Length: 104
Image (cartoon, rainbow, N blue to C red; front, side):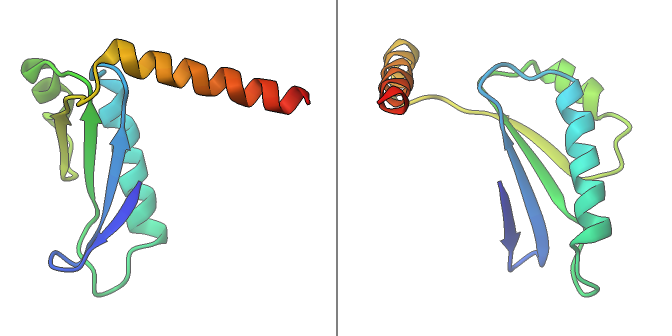
């Protein structure tokens, strides 16, 4: 997802991951921010910021992955309000219903 923060005057890229943090996510976000800064950032805007939201993270792994990154990237974990099993069932039911609609 891409947002513009009016107060900070910068683009904010949010990458939502359904699993645990992996170090390669930091490299991908670095790439996304480079693209945004090169192709989309206005002359009067600040550097783009990246936020990676994961289901879980290991603090040391995140620190090591971001250690020498020159771009502002943050990693946070989130908690589901709906239990994971219930969410998986809802998604499976929706996918099944969609597949059945396509066959008609």
